[in-house]
Image 1 (cartoon, rainbow, N blue to C red):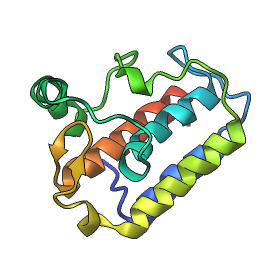
Image 2: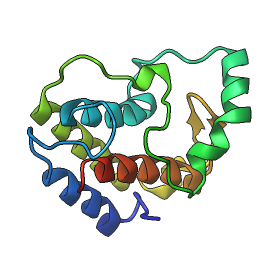
Image 3: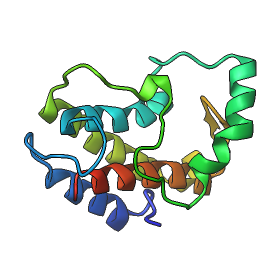
Length: 150
């Protein structure tokens, strides 16, 4: 698994993102490329921006019990896996804006580094270690970049 906190690995993700174009077509799934980039940005919005509501205690308990282990482990996501409602992007998005946002989030995460994420609290899963954060970031990016064949 790539390590989002390592410069060369984060640069690899960025290089793959720059291979995308407005006309890139998915190998699977319903999202167009702009929606996919916006979808990937949600993960970072939950870390850096206060625009998504915090789940209530019951929902957070269910997420930790049934979802967390699949999100933070190293096992790749299967194609067409279901996603949480806040990750569903159904409206049209600006390709260049979403691409730039995602690249900037990756750069920011890499520059902040592994230590910044050690024990950091996730909106949905509670406290995570830096390996779990990395797995969540890297696995999600890799899944969707493969979805668009880059």
